[in-house]
Structures are given as structure tokens and as C-alpha cells.
Image 1 (cartoon, rainbow, N blue to C red):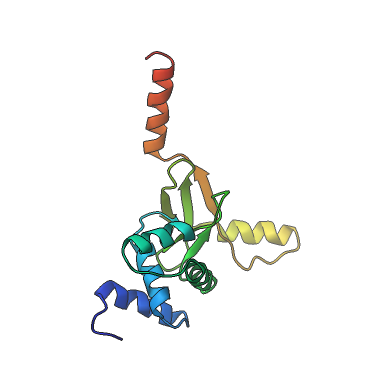
Image 2: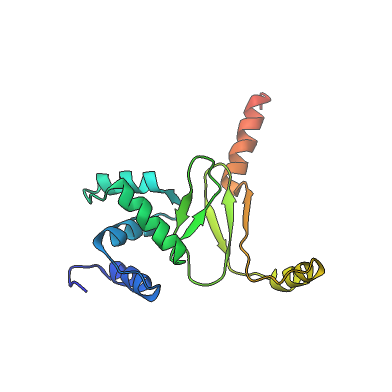
Length: 157
């Protein structure tokens, strides 16, 4: 690895290598930019950010990189946007997401007690559960407070 890579790039390159993905310059740029995002981002948004940072990566490369990273489990693909899939660099290990429907804030939930329940429900239907994922949509506290303020204003309060 190059001595010019930052520590975070080294860590991200390590995640790629651990997933069996070659850490090309394009993939690292996409993953590094996604790592700056606290919630999630679309391929289009990442492409625009990379252009602004003068780190040119073609849009097709961004889509390919995100697809490869998602298939390898390095990033999560979150289908909560009607327009385009959103991507997020999450912590390693099993987790679920709470997603704000208004601002797209994403919170990882690592405490999962669904396994036993899913095994029972699946068995009742003649299935064997081999995995699961859960994305819960709702409103975060900030957006709920904003709705409360807007509602009070609309009522003349």
C-alpha cells in the first residue's frame, strides 16, 4: 500500500481486502467519500461530492463500485428512497437500521433479538430462516420537533 494513503484509507483498503475486493483507486475514493457521510448517500450524490473535491471518478465507476461493495457486504444498500438506492458504510457485524423518512438520518441497531422469533415463525410455515435484515422507517426526534413547530404555527400558535 502507498505511503500517501491516510490512516482511514488504509483501514478502508483493509476492509476491501478482507472482503476479497481489490482496493482500486476508484473504489477507495468512493468508499472514502461514503465514510465521510454520517447517514447514507446515493451514487449520484457521491459522484457530485467527488467532483467537487477534484477526485474525478466516472458515474459508472461509482455505481459499479457501490454494487461490488454492497454485494461483498462492505456497505449496506438501503432501499428507502423511491428515486435511488442509498448506501451506507456501516459497522461490521449483524445490525438493523432506523431511517428517518424526512431527513434520512440512519441509526444502526446492533441489538437483535429476532433470531428465535424468526426461527419459530419460519418453522411454523415450513421454512428454515437463513438470514434477515430489517429497516424501520419513522421520524427522528429532530424532524418530529420540526413537525410540532410547523403544526403549532399552522394552528396559529
